[in-house]
Image (cartoon, rainbow, N blue to C red; front, side, top):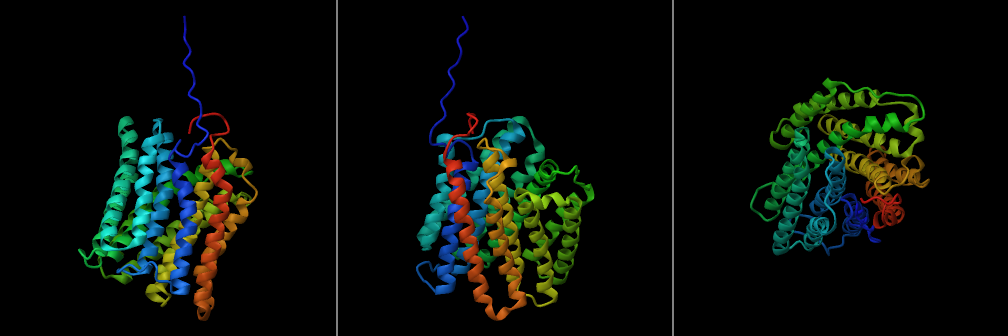
Amino acid sequence: MLIQERATPLPAFALFELGFRPFFAAAALFAVLVMGIWMSLYLHSAEWIAPSFGSVYWHAHEMIFGYALAVIAGFLLTAVTNWTGQPGIRGGLLAGLFLPWLAARVLFSMASDTTLIWAASADTLFLLGLILGVVHPVLKVRQWQQMGIIGKLVLLLLANLVFYMGALGFLANGVVTGIYMGLYLVLALLFAMARRVMPFFIEKGVSETFKPRNRKWVDWGSLVLLLLWAVLDLFFAVPRAVGVLSLLLVAVHTLRLADWYTPGIFKVPLLWSLYIGYGFLALGFLFKAGAIWADLPASLAVHAFTVGGIGLMTLGMMSRVGLAHTGRNIFDAPGFLGFIFGLMLVAGLVRVILPIVDMSHYTLWIGLSQLAWMVCFGWFATLYLPFLLSPRTDGRRG
């Protein structure tokens, strides 16, 4: 007699069913909180978070190793199940990975030497767990092509340790080096993930028949140029070489955008958010060259990379993954998404374009950009938290 196995009932509270759920939810809420704190520090001279290494570096660290890394963790822990066909971590194991990330955020905000040591320990534990969570299924099926992604995660762990060693006084210039190393590694991960998914998303998502073009020399050239650019900028005082490499990176990534372009992109918010976000990354390299040769503020390049580029691309990725992996139709996305992405676009443009037009109101532009960022992520969290907390609509696990 054949005995059928009883299906495991889906939990009503699904936050720890798959990696994207806790990390996307936390990233959205943290994006509002950490920007609100930064607004109080920058615009109102609040002193309730005043680390010895400077509040601007507190802000930078938490946007890179707090917000951006949470999105990357959620994406990779979910994507690796598709790449390898292996089940993703869930339940208590996933909660155990999420808690060190959360603990590090709380401890880091206290900013004493003692809490910094504990924050460093929690951040290290989280990153080690994330690396293991991605490595295990990859090694199980011997997908060696994923080792580039894993290598970048290992380097992110190193970058964070460099930052903490600088913050604790053990490494001269470690704070700045760790932050910029972390930023450039996040850019490298975004470029890698965009190359994997954007051509497919565009081909399947536009109404017209279109096949994005991918050139091998662009793939390899962009990788090599970015590596040289990052190494020279971080460890060698050769600004002219960095400027030349910046312009070459602008050219390579503009060509890639041209190869992926079709007018139908701008009819689909889930596509144009990623496409324009990628464009902001290319703009960041242009502003980097401008800081070297045209006396543009260096912060414009940083915020083209972060607010416009990382902001739009991570928001677009979370929106798409959050629909697809909760059983919803990505071709029938919530109508408000276009407005949410529009707010992030406004935040990026106000932060990096208006200061060039009118530097006399620089503080105002920063405040407006911060406000647009917070409203954007607050709206996104309101829309997506019910999706992330509840089971899939199609009855499947995940």
